[in-house]
Image (cartoon, rainbow, N blue to C red):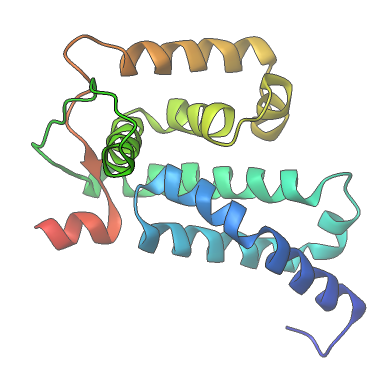
Length: 179
């Protein structure tokens, strides 16, 4: 970082305020904390380089979300050939008010979301896990609202398939740990 400028202080405050939210999005996209940390750090490095421009936008948080999504999608394109597919299939149909069971169900839901193609995964994460409205998701992705709705519909249909989603695809460190 440059020597203590006002811009640097603003960036540090932004990171302190938004880091957990950005990491949560990254975890939902990557499926594990290690890859999520890398994704957030790569995205924050990109933001820092253009921080003056980012800070001048109406919503630096939205800009950061879009940077995470774009970094994730570009990384998925580069790593697609190195993914390792797991043969584990999880039953996603039980419901409970027990905290342990709820934790397992959330894990299973995230595992199911990880089986979606990256474009559907991004829309489902932003729309439902981040609870963003369709216009905001469309703005972040640079797509029309109708395209976001259609992608969301296809992703939800895939998650609702009677046989459950296909096997979970693990990438990055998680894949290598299982190998």
